[in-house]
Length: 637
Image (cartoon, rainbow, N blue to C red; front, side):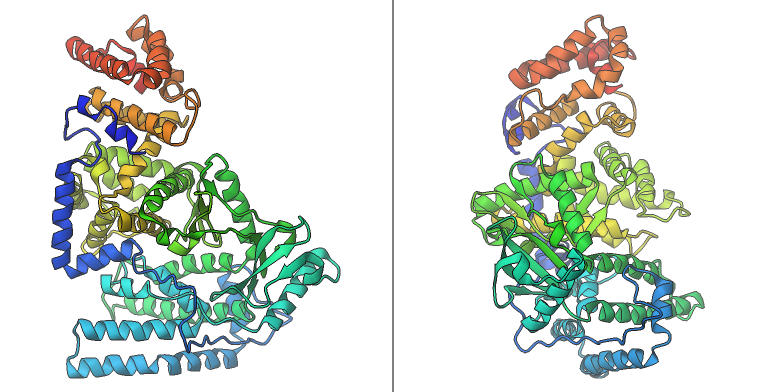
């Protein structure tokens, strides 16, 4: 994707207002910032956390680890809800004080050494870094021992710089989801029961699988995986994930108890016993709870996998494991076995190339399809033997609405033009700022953050995670929050950048994303993106900017080449202006002919000619004044 920056670059004179790749000035500024970050431990840790560089991706559980679960007695009259329902949880657990007390006792006795240690630290004045690291490690061990709910909650909090300190974020990312396996006979009993329910008749693993490993090849907090070979389709190797016993019961009880605690904290805030905070912990917990319930439903994971496979069908270098719905149930998931090595452990050249593939894949999900893979930790991305990017595990997904997709692109356009007042409005529309808050006092702070981020290379020179870290700081001073869906986006993009930076210190995810963004601006038929494209080229003052349009066209061509698309596969600006031919013709008699010639053929065959015509259009527009004399106006309208 970088070919678009190299090809023909000497023909363009650097301009601060033009969207550019990383210039040497920007690289120097970035290295200077990284040097200062070494001195600023808190900022360095926040960057590390946002990039997911502390994520624990161990293949095995820690030695001596034991995970506590609790088997709640079944109530036939009031069944345990299979989807998140607060009232159903209350109806189920309110009559079970014994189960509540048993779990509270487990939590209290497990956490007591940490509570006592923290109290002793305060009494003795031991509050330095060593004490923080020691207690964080102790906390991680306790959370893992307490089971899947607390493991997942800790991992969710580890990407929230608006809620936790940088050091706590990094330490929480060391939480390991790998736990000891449970006995295989219990797993096989669950498998046979689920297969019987799926087929409506007695069915065992021997009826479905030719072979299966005698022991699990991996074990996590929610389930464990066996490698098997199907009988139908014959010879297909698959991964069979079987849910742990009592997981739903334990997760539901923990959620019930933690939600009661969160409600009590909210009550204390309301009556003023503590400083009021902007964070609604109950709402955050409800958002998290709905996601963990989805992860517990393997039928949902299968449906997600099928949808992502369809969404990624046009990307030849991305491989999604085939799912087998006929064998999947709420507690059993069967999908194609993918061979490969973890992307984070591949050679630097392979990492760089496949991270670029990953950028396109995740942007396709984010800005086009609207179903986003929200758990791209290093273990979920593989380099297959044929050099493709394999993406695994679709239990944790987030849906991106049209308003959110278009809103993010609009915010980028306003960022390019440094229209910070509009960015404030964008942030309100994207749920970063509560609807009732006046954005005017926040605009100066946004101006400072984005001016610093944009200095030395334009919007594409922004380091995504540095910007996220700065925005996290704003949350401390203004009514600014990170919505749950965007926290997952931060994690996904941050992890991709973190993997790439290991092999290429100059990697910038925004730089790599620009060709895809250009493709969306130039080809998406929606009215909102057409208007955004018009704003991108003409700006707030309505002045045509040939250099910015050239950058968009070059980036589009780079995307076409990198994805090996035929010359006419992307109608490009032709699609963006198909509904504006009449305006173009009114400006210039040959507007439609020029549009077809320059866009469809000139861009592909003669880049210099395309750029020359664009610059001539801009000069002609300046001579005429308010009335453009080229198809450039039609292109924007």
